[in-house]
Length: 132
Image (cartoon, rainbow, N blue to C red):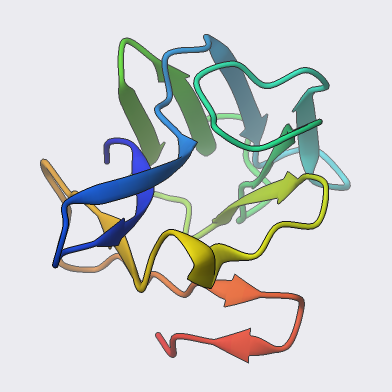
């Protein structure tokens, strides 16, 4: 997946949440007890103030060979898992309050390549969901 932006298609303006240029990686093996996290405390490649990003990966099946990976860099976000794991991956952004409607009216997430078994849900403010 590539950069996430809020876009106003009428005048082609965009507020970049994350362009995924900042290198960050986290992986979790299936033999671990809990999820593995990695936080970028000062996020670059964003138009948001005081932004941070946390990757969380959780592999399943209690086998060291099972893996869940999240990586960013070079304008790409990669989320993958091994064949034996049906784990989960999440990305949480934190930033100062912003009025998204002042510059945008849509969310754009460009998907370059995706496995058809993947389910994606976007949640805003912990309550508003795009659905899976």
